[in-house]
Length: 318
Length: 320
Image (cartoon, rainbow over all chains, first blue to last red; front, side):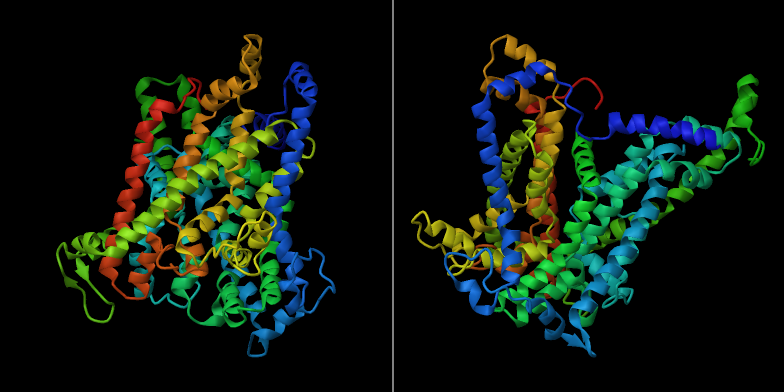
């Protein structure tokens, strides 16, 4: 078994290099390089463009950061002070004081709720989508293709169509003002996109290993858990990140289903800072920066998986 | 018809068996696999029934009802559908959504492609630039709505103070009906990172040999772009276009947070109007009718795009 696994490990890396959407190393040719080398002016022009655009794209986030370190008066200066003078640190501690529930800072509640929902929903998405995707990719059964095409169809369906009836369903289930609507459906592989992504990845794995294990009498669950899942780490990481972010960002569901402020996730809780302290921009921006920080960290840590995942979805559209 | 015996390997041995034995041996394995397959797919089957099919059918039922959640629903026939054509706000929100989509999405694609082209020229620091262009898309939508609310502030927003450098009078971005939708589109342009990354992958998939051949034939840089790059990435463009249109038609959160549909209904988009009807006026039937109208529009545009695709999307013979 170990031998096989190792063998396959090497097979996998080879596969990952060819099929994953990572940018193929530029095979090209000195000729092309030479050509670009000659076009020195074009190249430096491109650099100038990129620098300018890169700056423009960064302005909003830079502005969030500087504003969050300004005093109330500092935001009204013109031209904009990019480095606040003086640097005001108190906006962040203030976040803890402005909104409290039973002695606890509101923002702590908001983050706890966000992480609770996002993690449980992501785990559910992973477990259910992996099972379903494996069934669609590798197991032979009569209704399989029909059901797979149904799951593809849900990808195309605008979820807005079922907004009202879904709300009524959760109301009938007495799930209003609980986290259930934001978690439970995701344990039922409701997002065709993730099924599709994982299925495509499973299809790319070498089937020989699984067949060998099957001949040795392993059932599908053991094969999935013991062979397929360990080989599919890149796809699973991609799905986890996408799913986590999606739930971290989710605004409409909590808006519809929650009404107790202490149950709000951060996406909704942000509006409490906005609502109560409309003109307190530094405080708002401190809250915003705190809210954005985890997503940016996640992106910087797992950038490769992101880019791969995005490219995979785009290329799958071909 | 032997029962599925776990642990034995009938499929394996079947190679040396007679036709009938093969059939029965395989069918035992096949039957076991069929059951495993169905059980594994059970989450999707149940989820589809409970969270897609049931709500969809319920939604069809609601279209023909008048229901405010307090009194029991009453059958009103096609009234909700007729109301769609009478309701002025539908026309307004349809117009706003179309403006936002049909001006916004092409601009997004152009910007995304332009950025991808710049990054495709093996510049130094590609990873850094890619991160810079991608980060905005990582910003939670609520956060970016709040940030842009202040960027677009008529007096103290940085956009206006930037424009002042060029002698442009301050624009009342979110308070001027003419400027509000462009402001929203500008905001979406900030988030083109994912589209850019998809384009970049497409660009990198174009075989260099094509460019080299064209260069030998004397094609200029622009000609190579027009006659090689554009056709070769057309399937990527198509993907971005279809996905972009579908997403754009469902714009909600930014308008909900930033303008609540104002000024003078200039940012009253369809989903926002649906939300109002459903959850502020509690017209469940009418809101469902709006939802189905939106659905029909999105499907229609998607179908049209697929139809038109054969005219401009180049499909490579090789499986992708």
